[in-house]
Length: 181
Image (cartoon, rainbow, N blue to C red; front, top):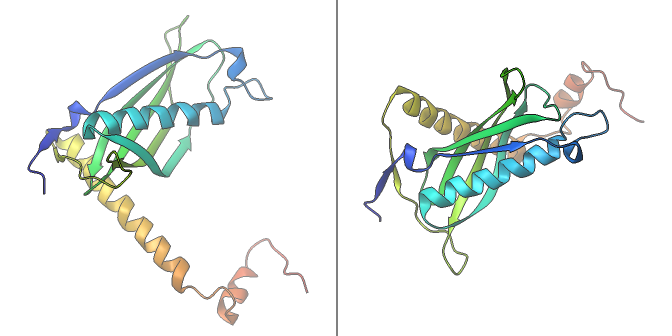
């Protein structure tokens, strides 16, 4: 077991990119898929920087699109490791866009990626422990614990819930659905 611990700030990465017309969707806003691609890149860089190893995306736990991003805005993504397990890390990412003419900044997205460190043979490898330096870092770590707990609870529910039970079917009828005969 590794005795190595690193501070959260050793994982921090910031990238900025100007949004171009080629990044738009059919409504003229920046395509969410393009933003997801950038999010995955910064999550990889953040986790790899912190762990010192190649990292893979294990799951995209949360992606909340809060405000649209416009062509010509400067998008800045800030990432840090919020939580570490044995070989996994939860990377939190904040996305802001800035109108470079007015200086107005919008919070556009918050995301959480679970990344796993790998050795040269592709096996999981232990990551450094995390040194928490302030209340905000403690809050983020505790939120990571909560995310993991909710994920385990959701997975357990999937395994044990009987979707075909009379009770489950009766409850479905309270929603805006119709069951085919």
